[in-house]
Image (cartoon, rainbow, N blue to C red; front, side, top):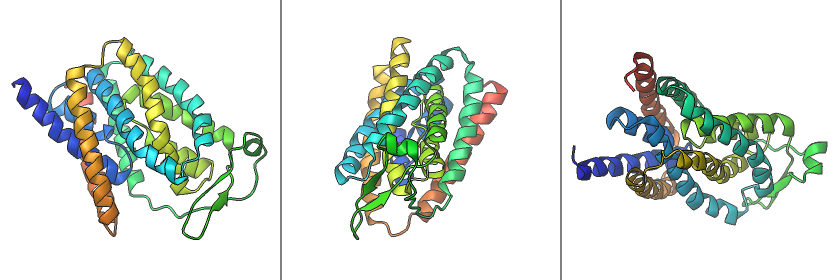
Length: 278
């Protein structure tokens, strides 16, 4: 395969990865890595390196809008980044020594988990009961709505912190933003509103990916020739996805499309991991 055809395939594939990631909020890395490893036979360590850089790029672009609107809880995000960054560094160092077929199987399992989560319907929750630790760290906040600012409190800070460390390890190990795990930590464990959870997660995944990317860069697993088309494709895909999302009335069908595509990719990753074809 010529370099031009190889690059065009990556550009097109990354575009759809960014589109799907933007429409579902789970990031494009879950599609990019299977695309590079299964279709183009790229070493999974180089695929993870390219995915991490694309996560940084997309997070930087989309997180700025949510921060500007005042939805993102910046203080909470920076506090939890202590856990995710430490976890991401550990995960990235582990990935260098773990055989690729085991990484592929674990990646497939996480993909299935993400597909199930994307179909979950979550009702909005507002907790106002004060937690001593959250109050001490000044993590409680508010977010704007059409009816005015809504105050909320943060619960179970310790449990959320541990879950974030686990999300960081998975991010560094597999080259994804671990947005689904971060949303679980904030939404289910720390009981903060879903809208704040998703936007704060979006802000955090870029920082977490940056910590992992440093390790991959030092190991020589970030190839400019691979990263460039991936980042360009994902950015354009994410831009298109945000435009579609603004004009669509229901996101139900999007979640089903994402779940079906990701489940198929998960099956392929697990199968190739078990048979050693990756």
